[in-house]
Amino acid sequence: MASKKWTAADMPGMQGRTVVVTGASSGLGVPTTNELVKAGARVVLAVRNVAKGEEVARRAGGLTEVRQLELTDLASIRAFAAAWTGPLDVLINNAGIMMVPYGKTVDGFELQIGTNHLGHFALTNLLLPHITDRVVTLSSGLHRGGHVDVDDLNWERRKYDPSRAYADSKQANLLFTLELQRQLDAAGSNVRAVAAHPGVASTNLGSHLSGFRGTMAQIGIRVIAQDPEHGALPTLYAATQDIPGNTYIGPDGLGQMRGSPVVTAPSKSSQDPDLAKRLWARSAELTGVGSPMLTRA
Image (cartoon, rainbow, N blue to C red; front, side, top):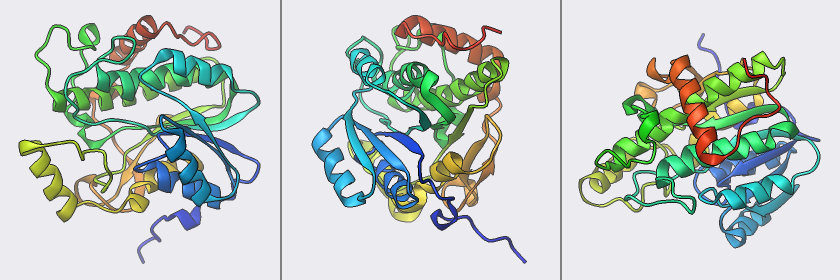
């Protein structure tokens, strides 16, 4: 007999636990927030648009709080972290952008690596002294096309390609998780760094796409995509189940595009420890944020 597929109904009670969800005002952040609140967690919605976040919080009910966070601005990230007091059980690095035209963050980073990786890198390290359980970082199946160039993270030497830049940022999410877990282990910490990807979900992440990319995205959404509620399941699994550090969760269906959450294997290149260390060092240099609480092994 086949084993039962995991759903949000299988989440443990989250009473007394605090979770931060970045990008909680749209896309996968909404069902992620809803299910965590339903399970009894106190959820802090870390969002760019406070008004939208407050509407999501109102509909979710339960214990929620909305705080402003702009991942494209290190000053905003530092302010968010500086204002944090008390324990934080789970940080979910959910926010992201996909295949956008070339642009720069407030601090001069290419937008996709700046938002998807560097912003979350800085936020995680600044909040790490408060985190008691785990860090969940969202990647993508498209990370397999990533070829992170540590010496050119901001696409200053290469011709910019939105798809490649997105894939790089998603590979960076997994390299970050790998190195964070290595450092946590070296420090003797019980905190875990894990990752997840939603498969193909019908969110607004690619709504800005036009031309060939836009056409393919629309076809994919109509034919393959699962709804945001199912797309959020790998995140919820990664955030609540007893899994080892550096575990990667994704859908169990064909090509990991849809289905129920299971432990899956990332690309070999995203598990390169030397590349992960080099990316960490460059990220710390660019953001000015390291990890002073961790042992430099």
